[in-house]
Image 1 (spheres, helix red, strand yellow):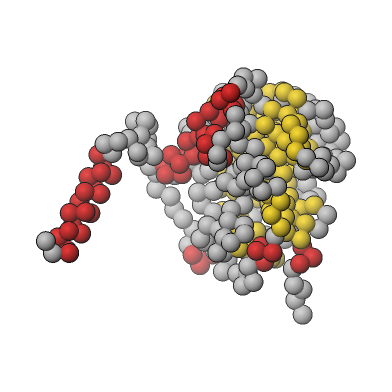
Image 2 (cartoon, one colour):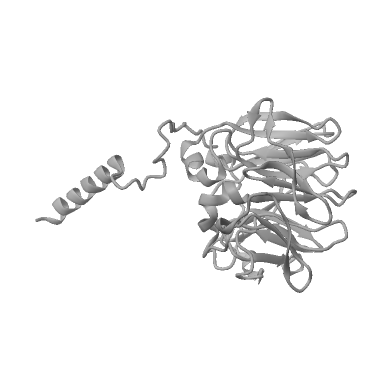
Length: 338
């Protein structure tokens, strides 16, 4: 049989396998109402082409290798202790300078289902039972730790740790399905993202493949205890952070590689596009949205993926839901331009 004929048969077989999915391997198996949506990506001409030719993130120090699984968010308490991080088995851990210790947890129903697994992805099927703390931020005045748990919504725990308390599980009558990241202003208002109203974190592949736009940005008022929707109908909103002066905050849409500012006190807002091949990259912007610096590890030799960055004492602490370590980049190692 000619090579071309063999190739045609193989391709036909692959097409039939993908179309019929006889062994239920498809990412959309079990989702009969799955609908894919057209996603209009930004024009390449508006995506920054600034590169880091030195791949400076390769100079990062790898810390706690094999000691933490999927440390998405890293936080330091008002006394400077830490880091604290949420890991794949649902716990929030605290580094006391010598060892990792249990600090808090978000589920009251933890069991043997939450026991250690070989990789961070091994916990997905039981995350809705064990909890999955993602974004973490300390209230600078009270010392309370606020938690965005993917399944249990917005929560907080006191400085002594323990079982977290629920603050919000819905907004405007719609349940939180994929609470992701958060930040806190000086008045104690909490701004956070809900990545989808249809898909939970354990179904993140379906969320990505669908391209749906049910994500929201929300605000929790600690005085009235009400949660309001600030922005809706956005695609996979993920990271969120306030500016240093508290005048605005940024939130990013994962499906579009786009970050938007939302004014709190500022009189302006802007949109920045990141885009490009997925790899370890950190981009620094000015308050006006000007790209100031890019740090990369394009080959992925040291820092293959980054979920969140925390700047602390001249160092960038990087976490990722996909890794089993924390990467730390010393800003002093960045060459100065002549």
